[in-house]
Length: 372
Image (tube, rainbow, N blue to C red; front, side, top):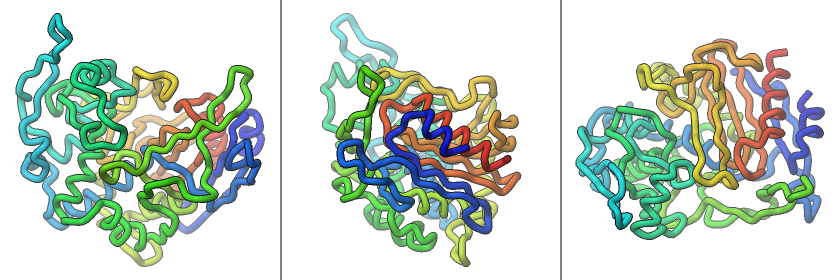
């Protein structure tokens, strides 16, 4: 099923894996790292996992919550002075100058992990793009690229955002260590994730990002979202499908894998519970469709958000149970974690823009194969 869907999708590459608590049920690597060299992809090929980084950083933050070094509901400005006096963008004056007011309440770590802080993304939210146009477009990978006013008061709405970048910086502030160094010791090493790290350049043999040309063929489009001024907790990791599959298995096992515990079982359960009340999560608009098209995983469901994950409240069309956890990376990589059935899956690809119909069809086939 996965191989047939891959052929129909016309992707440059895809690595698919299906896992349960006990091990790997299925794995397959298809396609090439780039259409120029035609080098075959392997299971261990490095990928830019982009926003699949967010779940890992959320776990790192929750480790510190367990230890009492971060508070879920304490003002995060006590740890991150940049967020101590949040301002809400109310509009722009006749000269295009941003108009701001003080936020109604402080931002907390819970707001950051649930994307309810009021922050946004310049490629999703036109008002954020307009704000940067007014004050000066920041350099990619700079701290200024995540410094922005809020779009709404913390807790009042859900919008996908740079919030997990800030959660990663909170981990650094609480530990006095670089995010990647902390995660290498306390997450990657215990879980046996030997090929996952924040890197300044794309490593040799990594899959390259592709785009479709006007004729529908594929061409390499050099894009790298790592490096920069800080370890980008929202999307900067390089990793492999087997590594991410080990993380999925650890979450299915309540925070433990091969005798190494990275979270308490009750913490994992809390991360998988709805944290945003009646708000709906998951829909992303687009201010730059060439980078990310409008996207909604389950447009017919009132999807919610836990501490780091999208939650589907109803049965998924491809088999996943209600209460499953999921998200994705901007280069069309995807995963899901189904605690009810004890199943999960990962698909890595490198294609832009996000939300490619072929990639989604391929991921759907992987999921149907898991439950079939």
